[in-house]
Length: 465
Ligand code: ARG
Image 1 (spheres, rainbow, N blue to C red):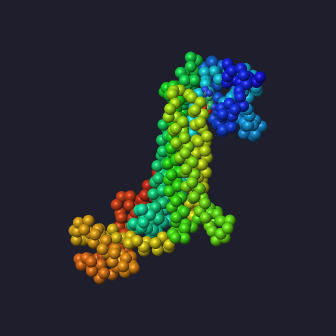
Image 2: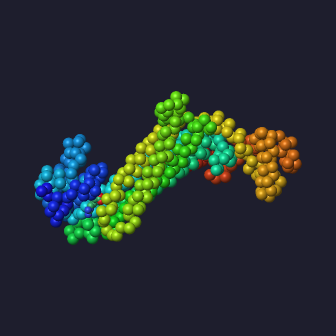
Image 3: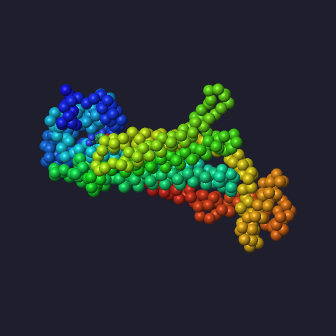
């Protein structure tokens, strides 16, 4: 019978069904590079502390590097019978270099090994996703810079509300993605501590140096408490939450792109590279890409809830339930990476139909609030009275079949005789937009400031570029 290297007391061959349920190699093989990276640091430390000999270390180092190359060029296939990536690599190493391979696992358990590998993976991908977010923010800023005077109806309840410019709308998404970026980076900092050396749960009597391995692996320092460390999957939950929130933002943008590209709006045109046809209706151009981005938000939400649920009842320390931590994270990372790449390409090539946006501003009496503000400022009318007066004027415009900005002075005076000639221009949508000069507002000068602020901020993110 083949000896199971991870089980000293079990003498019967595992049942096929047990293996099907228990083995994680089919998915955790994705962690091969992190596993080798961790083992190299661990073996180096063991040798420096005299726990293994330098000769053994030399063999382990050479063997692990060979294995890495063989996995990458396909000579060593990970489609094998081993329980997980840790056993597959250790087993193959031992078959290559003999007893030295069996010394690698001194002062280590798979519990700290898997916590390390998975954390390295999450840390690496947090930075990669953050970098992709920066690209998307840059693209949004580029679009915004070209459209600080492009009028469109700002909405609430999906009803026309007040005139804004398209640059302002794009900068809203840039601000959301900036927060997403900051979330990935702060999770990175918070979790930048090394689990290696925690062993099974209680630490180890071997005189190891956790600071040395933490340092070699790029962590700030070792984690504080080993019992917590081997039980902790907060870092995985954080990346799942960060991805879910970011995908929720992408989904809201996608929803708007879908609406805006419909015939009813016609505000944008997606490039043909990002649209598909129908198998029956020859005229169709469908926004499948934003629809899929919106749809994929469902699965990343599911992955977050899935892991929260796995973790919620677990006693300390490691429990096999925790092996369920990986597939959801792998799936969310893959989904988020692709989504950010696609979104960036689609946004860069999208056409903005400024004229249609501007035309839409003539529907919905967008400058009604400006008229109320005029009555407040000019006549000292209490805002609530002004609000009702303008309501009557909106009804008048509605009956006349015109926008409020098109009412003549006479018509305006028929409801409020104190309205003066100086009202001319105030109801114009462009003036209305530019009147909103309060900090963070939609006036072109304010949007240009927002663009400058984000550009300066982007320049400062250099260290992770
Ligand atoms: N494959 C396992 C996992 O992904 C590795 C840890 C196993 N530890 C243990 N004590 N069985 O969680």
